[in-house]
Image 1 (cartoon, helix red, strand yellow):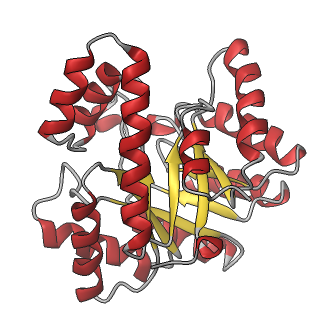
Image 2 (cartoon, rainbow, N blue to C red):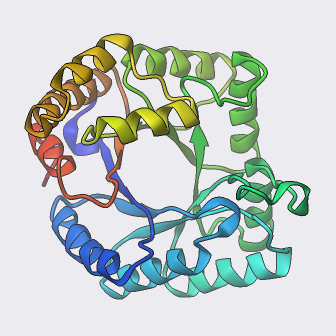
Amino acid sequence: MNDENDLRLSFEFFPPKTDVGVEKLKTVRTELNKLNPDFFSVTYGAGGSTRDNTKDVITAMRDEGIAVAPHLSFGGDNEDIMCNMINDYKNLGVDRIVALRGDMPSGMGAAMQLVYANELVAFIRKHFGDHFQLEVAAYPEIHPEAKSYLEDVRYLKGKFDAGANSAITQYFFNPDAYLYFIEACKKEGIVAPIYPGIMPITNFRNLSRFSDACGAEIPRWIRKRLEDFQDDQESITAFGIDLITELCETLIENGAPGLHFYTMNQIEPTRTIVNNLGLAD
């Protein structure tokens, strides 16, 4: 069991595409920053499609003195563009990057070449040494494109061998999936921390659609319970808060080194869950 004071807490945003979204995110990050997270992360669209928006959010948050980590993937960019972008982040005072393979934008096909996360990690280490803490992605329920469970675990080890410091997982709702995954990683020689990704439940339809697309399993009993509530948003939110709080408690009790919340650019219910757990300083 971990001491709550030793747990790492982080929150994830996506870059807004509208002026209204930009203004809203200013309020959201101000409120969530009061919980004293170790850092925020900001996502990067398929193929780098939100590259400029991501950088705008990172710049604004650094100007506010907030610790923030950009997500990064090669997309369609060449090495010079990537070096310049990473150097810009370094000059902003960024010292952490979430290094990802990334996804292809629909319709791009063979027009772009995937650069795998271990290659991106090695690229950053080659050009920037140990300046950045490098986070990578992990998949307790295994990446949808993986050929086997063991292959995916070994691929994660390859990211660490390339120079990654720690990993953040895809979200999940079954704690056993994470705990079994951690044991499998240890057997393959992975000793670096793997932080569970946490998805608060707010909109069941959106969550169901997104989970089906990314391979995150919603246990049948949870689906059925959420279906019972139909459009009763208050009941969905209350059930979600209780469920995710209990999930986090189980993870912490079993040695998870911290929590990474996918906030969906919302203050609630992330704030309530963090307070329920007693993690806010």
